[in-house]
Every structure is written in C-alpha cells, then in structure tokens.
Image 1: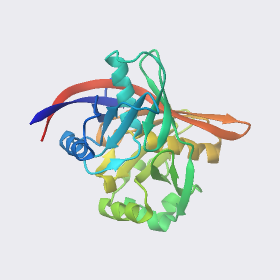
Image 2: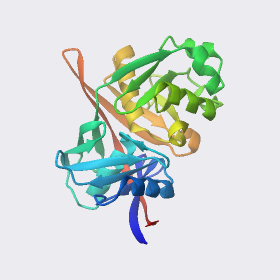
Image 3: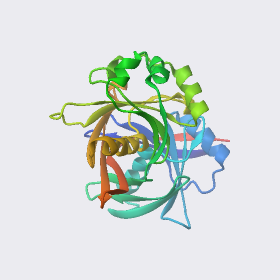
Length: 287
C-alpha cells in the first residue's frame, strides 16, 4: 500500500484565514481516475486537484469532488498555482493549464496572488421564482422584486444565478434534496445565491453556493460561479470589476476578486483571483 501526499491550501482566504480548502496532489501522472476519486473522497474537501504534465499547456489539471470528477474548479486552480509558487516550483508570470473546460490562462502575481482566466460566459435557461424560491425557504416575490432573472450561466461550470434582497442571504432554509433533483434534471452544478450590497460597502455582493448534487452542501468560496456572477452583473449593471464575499454562513469568510476585459463593447476575457494560504500536508493511503 502506497501513500500520496496531499497539500491542503486555503483559496480566496483573507489575510491567511477563512477561504475554501482545496486538496492539491502534485506529480499525479501515474494515478488512474479511480485512484484520484478515491483520494478525493478520503481528503474530504469540496475539490481536490491533480497536477500532471501536459503536451498542450504548462500543466494538466483534473478536479475531483468526493463523489465525482468536474470539468473545472476555480478555487482548486488558485490553490495549485499558489502552491507551486509557494514551493518555488514556478516564479511569478503567466501560465496555461489544460482542463476539461479547455486551455485556460493563469497569472501568478509577484505577491503570490493568482488571477485565473475563465471561459467566456455561456447563457442558458432562465427559471421562475415560483420554481426556485421554495428550495431556499423563500417566498417567490422576494426573488422577483429584484427585477433580475434567475439564470443558468457558465464560465466553466453551470451554476444558477439567484438574486435575493439585501439582508435575506443569511435567512435561507435550503432543501438540499430538492436542489439535487433540480440540478440533475437541468444539468447544472449548483445554486449561486447572491445579494447586492450598498454602494459604500467593500464587497459588491455577498454570495452563498449550494452544490449538493456533486457532494457539496455549501461551499465557502467558488471561483467559477463568481466568474459567472461577474458576467451576469456586467450584463445587467455594466460592472467590469467586482469583489465578492462568500463563506460567511459556514464561518469561512472568503474574498473573490473579478475583472472583465471588454473591447468595443464585447466581453473578451473573464478573470477571477485572490490570495492563497497553506493549511497543512496530509498523507493518504492508496491501494
């Protein structure tokens, strides 16, 4: 029986605290998908990233939740590149990662922060407040009063953007079983619920993300869904930069920064970033 070292890194942390733990396995070329899934299940965090060599990019990354492989994971990507820089395997600069969501650019800043390029948004189905609100323990009119649509958007993974009024985000009563059935039926990963903050606030919006269909009841920081939210807010309010807060409800406050590049009125690039922090190194037994 062999052992595999797994680094646990806090992605989107705030001054080294909070954030979202991701597992990172380096030199994963020899591992099978079954072994990767087993390791991710034993690690038990929302996603574990496996780093291998690539003939198309600087690195190949594969992402596994405790129950399933996913095409992309923003916070695990940040964790990988923050760790590579922390271990002095790479220096500050621009890199490319090969993922099942495509070849995506990553920038490692001099201070160690990581800025990831995501896929341009794919706009999918809109849903009614009457369908969505009961799964969050809300009255439909609370969602409808925002005047914003409930819409599935992807910049790597499909999440449903759900606006709620300011002050409501901490009062949700989530039906995880219903959300799981809905996401399986509509081929989406999870619900990204957000409330816009007052203009003077540090954060543009505060968010909660529920993805029980892929084994994550609530996630404290999500790069892909906040990339999608940045595009959503650009479409409806014209924002090109936004800072999101997430994880408050699970006592892991996180800060996610987003930047959109618009050329002649057309969105050309989606970037999501933040800081990382080392948590610990663990060893997983592998058959």
